[in-house]
Every structure is written in structure tokens, then in C-alpha cells.
Amino acid sequence: MLNLLETIQIRPLSDSTVVIQVGEGINEATHTKVKTILNLLETNPFSGFIEAVPAYNSLTVYYSPIDVYFSNLDKGVQTPYEIVKAKILALMNQSNITETTNNRIVKIPVVYGGDMGPDLEFVASYNGLTPSEVIKIHSSTEYLVYMLGFAPGFPFMGGMDAQIATPRKESPRLAIAPGSVGIAGSQTGIYPLETPGGWQIIGRTPSRLFLPEQSPPTLLQPGDRIQFVPISLDDYTKDFGVKTWE
Image (cartoon, rainbow, N blue to C red; front, side, top):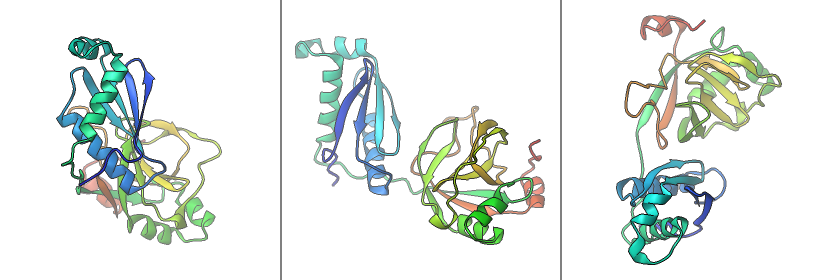
């Protein structure tokens, strides 16, 4: 069983949101608690609950203060925040809570280097490696998706080998191609849309991360495990039927 009340802190963020602080730092144990609380709230929503958005070590819970207040008039004079906090604590105080895990593994094909990964050489040089060694290290790791943010479907992942950690670019690019795979510090990520950005771009995937025509509208979800698979430029255009982004 999982003790969710240990180290948990709940605080108001606004008149319609609360933050559930689960722990500190970025680690898998805290992520498991975040996912478990998210599952509890989504499967046992209180009246007025709108949604809960997970982060590395917290969740932000959105609710309707009016719905919360008027659905609890029989419980005395309480603010919506007090009601929501009590309901969250009661939910997490259940004695039969088990961990929520997601073992889905998603393989992401990547063309490394060249026009697809213009910063691969820099990442290699910065770390005293060859480009081939960077590719091998980057594609030999299994990454955990902790959260989505920045742009729709952008995965923030943990697990990158420190051997290829590289600082962000001093001057961000004004436009980064959709599908670009980058490194920033000790993190790696994938740009789902054309946006500005300062990550070191080492490759590109033909996989679409933002799928507005589907539900959910993102390829990846928190809890997914990612494996990057090196492919050739011919594979990118031939096997996946995707033209090079200009």
C-alpha cells in the first residue's frame, strides 16, 4: 500500500486552484505518488472538480469555487479552498491505495546529425566524445516522461546520461522544426511544434507528438517510457512517408 499523506502539502494558488506538493526534486518515487494522486482525483472527482495537471513533484488542481461551495452548504460555513483541501486529504487517507504505474514503452525513431541534428557535433565536442558515441549513449537509455509542458505534447523526461549533458545555446533559435530532438543541461526533449528554443538539436523524428484530432491529443503521456531508435534519412522519408521540414 502507498502512504500518500507522508510529506504531502496542500496550499492555495488562487481562488480556483490548489497545489498539492508531493515531494522535492525529480525522481521516480515522487513521480509515482504524483501519478497515483492524479488517478485518484480523476476516478473519484469531487463536485466542482475540473482537472488536475501533474508536474515533476506536484499537481495543480483546478475547480469551480461556486460549484464546490453550493454543493457543500450542509457542511457548515467553509471556504471552497477548505472544502477542496478536506476532500483531497480524505481521498488520500484511504487505506487501500496502491501505486499507479504506467509501463507503456514508446519507441521514437530519430535521424541524428546533419541538417536534422545541427548541434550533434557541438554536443560531442563539448563532452569529449565522437558524434557516434553521443548517438549511442542517447539511444541506449530508457527515459521516463515526468510531465508535458512548454508546448502541446512537449515531454519533460528524466534519465539522460550525464556524459552527454550540454548547456543551452547562448542565443536561442527563432524557429525549431517540429520533431526536433534536443538536449538542454541534463535533459532531453522533443519539440512537437515549430517554436523558438535554445536546446541543442541533435536529431529529428518523423513521429507526430501533437495530435489535435485525437483524444488525448498528444502521443506521449506522463508515465510513458521512451526509447530513441536511430534511423537513416532514407528511412525517415521512405518508411514513414514524412517530408523533411523546411
